[in-house]
Image (cartoon, rainbow, N blue to C red; front, side, top):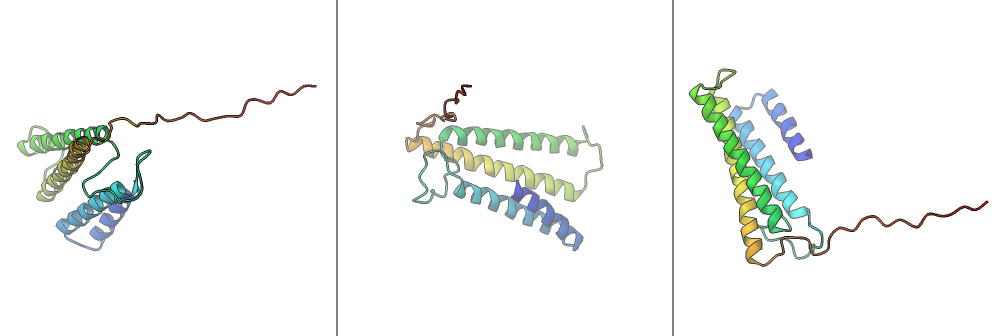
Length: 152
């Protein structure tokens, strides 16, 4: 969330400084991908070893999570594409569509599609390596001490 917020703040700053919209979009894209890939390198699943470092293609600890996130990003990119087509054809366009709007929408769709590919690729490769889909050790609930009985 912090990386997304940072991207918005930097975008506003760059627009205020007068940078062309294409430069702002490229900067935001680099920040988005950098945050995603850094997060995939840093965060580990339960029971996943810290060393050695994750392979470059590995996005999650389990193939099931990678597959679900990949499907989510496919759906998001398809919804973006449908929305763009509806706006371009004039079926639904609440505001006039500018060239910068089309570039920004297209960038978002392509970015979501690339992220979907990365997660789905991770799911396939993890499955091939035989990584279990479920966590071998289910999460344990909290352990509380037995209540103390006070006697008068």
